[in-house]
Length: 367
Image (cartoon, rainbow, N blue to C red):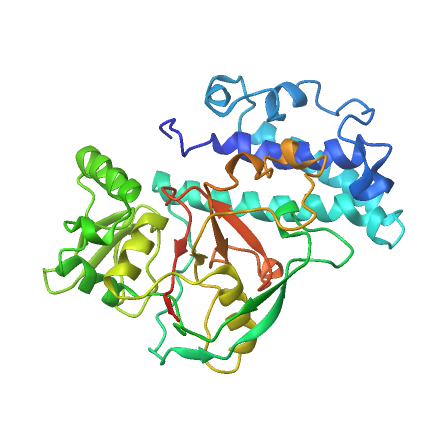
């Protein structure tokens, strides 16, 4: 793989999964404290003498990870197997309560997120994987959702990301929302209407980003798109190293937030707020609201909820969003590359508006 700002060494990502689990479980005598466990708690030694030097993200900025003398694939697998065996042995002896299970849940959640990241890295590198893209969905009319007061956030015991914690009741006026994410056939209309040539649809920062991307790679559509629009409306996108014709009803994938926002403006609509998306996912479950094929951008910038406090583990897992509050955009839902156990309408993720390497799409909304 070619090092870059959006790319991490896959062996580092895999090894980091085992390291985080070992660091917060096997090496952490205070793991039973759960979320109250301090970040600087005394640690026992690792089963791998170089583990901290290789896989602790707080000691290795991202660009430096390409220069590390990481073990080969077999060595990383051995480390993963050894840490997993210890983790499972400790889990068998762990009481069934939220504090005791907290770091086991963290390790599992983190592994699932990193697994999806590895799938995205495989897509970027053109690695042949046997994953099947989501099928298209028959177009259904937009859903009209009545005004409501909705509790945002997590207040349940157990594990959740910091940015999901807290409870904020939100008053949401009546709104209309697409029943499914924007499809390729809809996006082709945007392309053919000059969407990538008309700055009136783009926010100033988004237009600047687009011009830079156009100069660098001649960008005329979402990432990995090889052909789109005009030529019979066909969309060809590179999928795990192979050109594939996208079905018109399949969801747009690898779109940046800037592109999602520009499309919504072109369509005379907007991106949904987090509250609108979440309400629709619950209220529209029996009315055709489809989600889970792609992660989805929402409107506005990421902000902390009431009572936000960073957990001690967040920096070691690179899941601390504090540095990007007010800049990153929130994503909701899951993608076809997500583990099924992560499917929850309240789950929250984020990314900078220019990021497009993940399996992300969007839907539109109107007042």
